[in-house]
Image 1 (cartoon, rainbow, N blue to C red):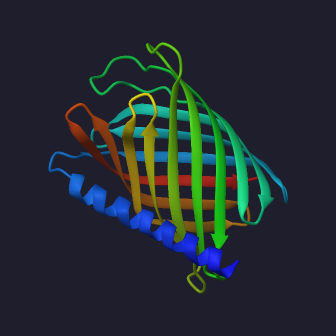
Image 2 (cartoon, helix red, strand yellow; image 1 turned 90 degrees about the vertical axis):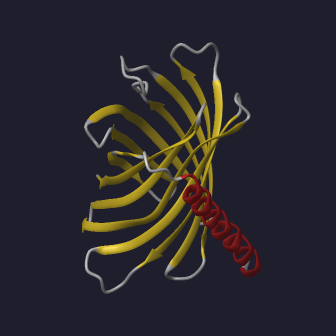
Length: 228
């Protein structure tokens, strides 16, 4: 097991470093600024099962315009300390870049998420999500996968600051046969408010591939997690 963890640890760190270099090369002077704000409520959190409701609001144009929001019930099964499986439904209306009415998006999502506790302060995990999407004004379904390696460092002696993390998520569109999005988080922090509430804050560089190249948005984000 020690050899396997070491190999997977290097693979995860290489993926994170690759995402950082790709996003640095694609940054432009006309990048947009936005903000994302989310809430997760856990209704069940047992040794094996977790059931949560997730919501999120996304703003663009210097955080002046609500362009998308997300509603998602999510079910997770903990196979072992090293593997979790997930099933989600997500409703994600989004306003086009040129403005106009929101256009709906329905998604059925399945997840296979390995994780590796390297030691008592470092954990590596890899979220693999496959999405079957129904998009307004698009015939049939659209398939997409997304993969997010993450490194989390647990902290001690810093008050409510429990941990910091870094991750990079890349998206592959199987209809377009190309990488379509990338979301790099070079720094995030988890702050324990009480025994049932955690506040997460982070900075993200969100990149979307358009017809003219990559379009970047700088996103400070926040997320509350409540455990009932």
